[in-house]
Image (cartoon, rainbow, N blue to C red; front, side):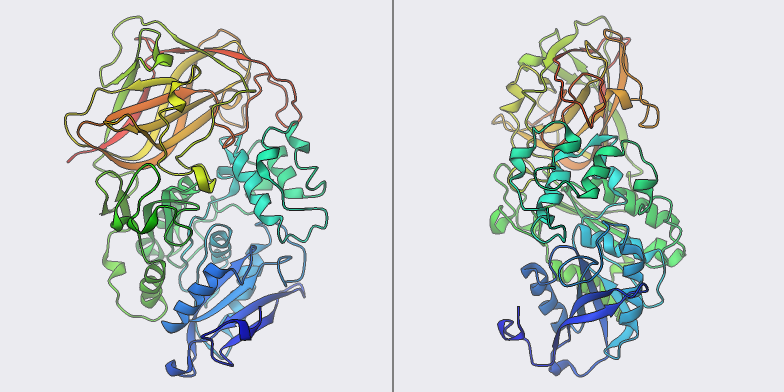
Length: 571
């Protein structure tokens, strides 16, 4: 892209491919956007984007134009080994020192007034938080969108491989990675490939990151080398975390907010850190593509005009406060702003989980017919023996991922799962139609008792909002791998036929189940390709190619009261 191809930019206000020196002698390439001459000759506060994708991505070009009009200089930099930058990209790890060195370089430029903030989505969100732990005196605040604490909660979820996320990540990188053997690929053709450790060989036999995801089942130094989980006491600036209920990184953002707001180095940083959660996904949001039209309408559910937000206003209100010293009122607001789906309203809260939550067990009941949509969900504990619900899980025919926090653009969000719930390997438990509006806002957890004919298998759970017309709208979901039921550091196979207790973390949601709607829980053993299939053999996951069918039994009697715990918010 040349200066001439960028209309509305005055000559001399855009500098392309500027070299930014790193401590090891490598130069990183950056484009520098200065405010229009009508705003004077500076210096100005600076907003920094560091990206692995493309520092001339159309979305960020539009943002840069808007930011400069609001009186900010903008630096958009290719990360190490990406785009026009030198060096070799080591995913995530290299962003610590490179980010800090960039903060220091910007702060010393004559067009910078000494105040630096950051912006960007996904990986560019992570390039904001990690180097903040090094505390450049120029960095005054950060605003990561859809970022993560580390990738053990993103590319691995409780030890299970976040299969689609890992493939999609490499698929995006295949367009510009500096690995000669890597090419862009159709990820769908690779989802079923076995064994997992060589599934990428047709694309790249050298890419180390995917190999690491497959090899490192437990949280170890490979993941910890760039994790924030033990570094929250190091940042000294406030952070504005932005995510969506259907974001594949939503769970990570709650970890980030709680870690940062409770443990940041200064009281000022702790008190001023914010979290914004909208009815968005990783791909569908005010900062990305919107298949829901202009009125906040997805294919299967509408959230109204109020679901849409102005991403530029989000940033300028935050940075006018923290970089320009303008009182925008944002620091006076409670730290959490969330969108309650169903009610379709924004609301402020003070903590997560919400202090006034009424934690309520909804128990699973049936006469052995939950696979025929006959299961009942109620707050009444089981008082007697009940028949088990049985199903067979065949890894060759897994339950298809649809909705919730699935990352794929076309299938994410509040999708209708009613047809999936007709499968013979999906158990369904549903409340009676609600007699009043019921708000569920907070972390969702399921606890089940089950047996399997396999020595290792998976169990999944999903929460859906059943509308009067029969649509079952996906809200959130989770998975547990049997061998990791006691933690990934204590893998243990099952004894076939023995009853085990399993806890399933279903992440977080905020939804008003309207009067006349039903609350429904699904239980099954696969969610594919969001998560990699358990082949039911107990063999090493990376090298396994053998497939076995597992016969599963779910118990829900008085001694094994399988249930989901819902965070009910009193109204």
